[in-house]
Length: 358
Ligand SMILES: Nc1nc2c(ncn2[C@@H]2O[C@H](COP(=O)(O)OP(=O)(O)OP(=O)(O)O)[C@@H](O)[C@H]2O)c(=O)[nH]1
Image 1: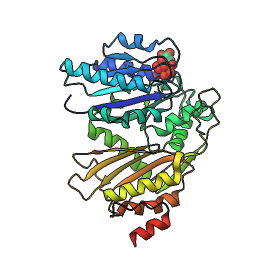
Image 2 (image 1 turned 180 degrees about the horizontal axis):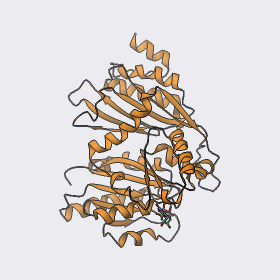
Image 3 (image 1 turned 30 degrees about the vertical axis):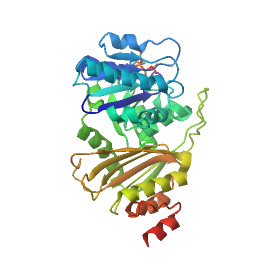
Image 4 (image 1 turned 90 degrees about the vertical axis):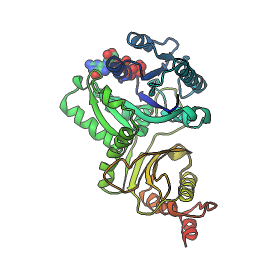
């Protein structure tokens, strides 16, 4: 494998249509360029049988929930996929789709991927795709913290089972999803028919999908949106309370430097600690490789992706943060840290940022 293979994480609440969507994609495109990792909650996995009808390149993870117990076997499985592809001379392997259990928190999975240097030599993170049931999704977002968390951190939201829902509940759900995650691209699907567009793997396609949805939101001004759900009822406790998950986004008007990106990230993590869930940004650096996508997952900042070209017509750099209790004013002020030029500068407050810049 000379170039990196994209890992897309497919999540979504129990029964929300993950397998149906993925199966539709495999039926249309085969598995020449795609390997699938399936993780099911419960001792007996069934999804692999659905997939094996259409595909060979399907790997079943041990029982247990991917985000809690089997990140090690995820790592081993990815390395196995890499070795199998190399031995078979499968230069066309372009993506691995990881289907989580319906109760999974996607963040630990992203950590397992992005925090592992060996894996990152061969793989790159693509998108988090979350399916939301058109009929039950709104109720699930209100009552199950897992569902809210999955939707909050997704790059793409796919409303499934639209054939079963009336126009009015669909409208309510669309509005709810906009509140939960205004940055995600939202598509709708009946019987998996949106599969092809959902699993696009081309780098520019991916960044365009990510950014066009951000752009629509940012155009309407700097904003924090908030949405709350009740605590998860069932025992799947990661010690995280899902009250007040919100998002903030802005175009930035300072020239970022790498020292500044590092200082800003440090400031952000120091300020929000575990309340920070996800951060994404498209930055135009004054550098030999100027076009950069940055990603943070929880408190971890991951290797940037360098783009061959700026992915859309708007030249402005932009940032998105998702987390708990976000403060738009504080975040907007924090952006100035991006222009810090001195690599050793580590401001921990906005006043210290001012000192660094004066
Ligand atoms: N009518 C209709 N049924 C659907 C659609 N998508 C999924 N289903 C049905 O919903 C049920 C659950 O779908 P799955 O694809 O297995 O859902 P899942 O998210 O993989 O489920 P878990 O792995 O248990 O979390 C199945 O009976 C599907 O046939 C759809 O778009 N329309």
